[in-house]
Amino acid sequence: MDIPAPSTLVVGGSLSRRSRPQGAWRVRAVGLLAALLGSACATAMAQEWNPTAPIRMIVPYAPGGTADISAREMAKGLDGLLGQSVVVDNRGGGGGVIGMVAIANAAPNGYTVGTIAIGAHASSATLMPNLPYDPVKGFQPISAIGESPLVLVVSPDNPARSVGEMLAAASKNAHTLSFASGGIGLASHIAGELLKYRTKADMTHIPYKGGGPAMVDVMSGHADMLFAPVSSVLPSVTGGKLRAIAIASKQRSALLPDVPTMAEQGFPDFNMSESFCLIGPAHMPASVVSRFEKAAAQVLRQPEVIARFKAQGVDAASSTPQALGQEIDAQIKLYRDVIQKANIKLD
Image 1 (cartoon, rainbow, N blue to C red):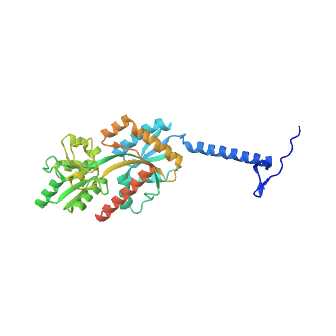
Image 2 (tube, rainbow, N blue to C red):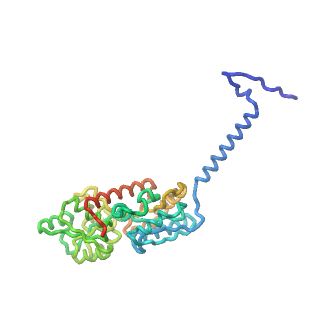
């Protein structure tokens, strides 16, 4: 039986739905199906990046330091989660600049990342005006890894039990306080200069080639004090070779619960730590950044990783790329402010 063609019904100056040609509906249906398939494919492609080759994790410092130890912990954890081996590549030299250049110049495809100390990076941003990379735009923040708050330590023979007592004794005896550091521009140096600026005390900086020699001279009394990461001084403090009189963190450390914070001793917002983070070269695809961010968070939630970090004096902590970027910017501004006010120059 023949089906009669539909009659034409004009509504509001156009063809009504029931009178439109069947071919137009087929075109719309095919277009809609193609759009849905395209959207599904795009979503699937954006879901997850899976590496197909080993990943290089550059550490811009010599082996053995806290940044290196943190990187190796991260590498072990990421191995299993990413399905590829993550190889730590130490590129020390030039105050960290050599390694930073290697990270910045790497292809932004996810196969090269870096673990850095934020303080060292922030210091270089001001002390080295002709860096071969942009300290902010040259890198992609991925995730925080952890931090080790700075502790103010003195010799066990020093009678001072607080920052106030140390400053009062120096003022009474017209004694110029000396503060040691592991080198110009490092976190230990910046913290000392910040205390000097806040208190207007008569203080002299003594730079050493590394935190080890600085600690030795404080132990012997050749230098009055030293700000150093908990990770560096914990064995010496618990062993009685150094006395901790303040910690530059918002809360007391579980590793040194009897040591009051700088804020508790009248120095609000005196927060200084050696922080470590995971970064990559600029322009990494969002899917790659997201995969690393999620994997890093998983690693840093593992109880055994938290315990191993804690044994090194480091509090494990992940973050979003956005939060890490803000932290790096804030540290660069803080270091720049102190360096400029103290007129710090590299030798």
